[in-house]
Image (cartoon, rainbow, N blue to C red; front, side, top):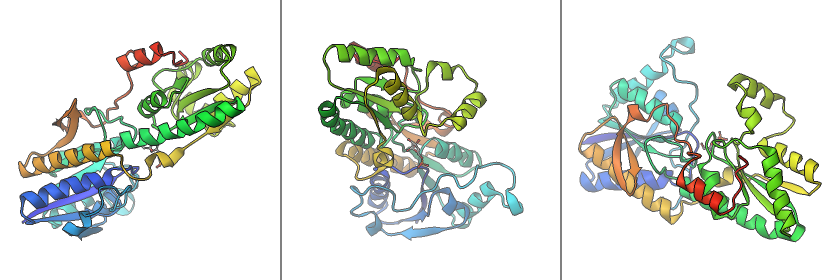
Length: 358
Ligand code: F6P
């Protein structure tokens, strides 16, 4: 009997269940149900505290379209360090102990950047790990595509679509702030798909004067409105020059809840135009996976199960073009995949007349 542990960690997304289903279906199919899947509750917390459920094949039925995660998730409950925590509790040792006590053959980990880092640590500690790249941010190094990304792009695009009619009616400027953490993939794709006039990304620091000039140009052409798609991590050229510490201090002292509000105020003050801020927030992570993500997750799940069957551990399954390949966890951990300001997609967006504020 093969014994496989499974957990979902970090911020959720639409295709976590679809991906777990892909892994489970492939394993049950290959091993003719001679496999036990231990689902750890709320990510690494469950592994640390021996909190799990023995899953049944029926647990994975009917969840292809279900958003969120049936196992629950948590941000890393506390930073993983190789030193004993309070009360002499060593978090890494605790996770190893659960794994060893249950005599698991391997552990399947679904998560984003922080999760992959911990997955690599556990792999270095001798646990058999197979991981899968989850995040709406699409920022995991080593893979062209993460599951959850496309569904979030759809929701963010829909948010921009909905703004178009009201922006036009009222002749307003709208700043739509999109998620993405420190990178701009989600905003870039939703911005292009939603027909945003201005797209601001963390990877391309903006000059507010260039943003104002783009709006003025539109006004002069008789356009009644302008729509900005702004990544939550967008940063001005001046702020990009600050040290991390200085920037954090400035942000903490800022009267604005986020960068979009600051930009909105600057636009309103400079142009005297009505500005509205829209923050779709966690809706971007909610609901069902779209059809594209269902295919992506099912394929990633099957590929991860294939690694387990072949007993190839220490890898994350990753998209390279249309193929799925194993990438060593040590080559993924601690790195970030950012938007290249000189990439083709940015060049083409600029050719379309989209302003990036640079
Ligand atoms: O990583 C996914 C993400 O949704 C980011 O885009 C966002 O910055 C962050 O998580 C929000 O985190 P939380 O779920 O803790 O509010």
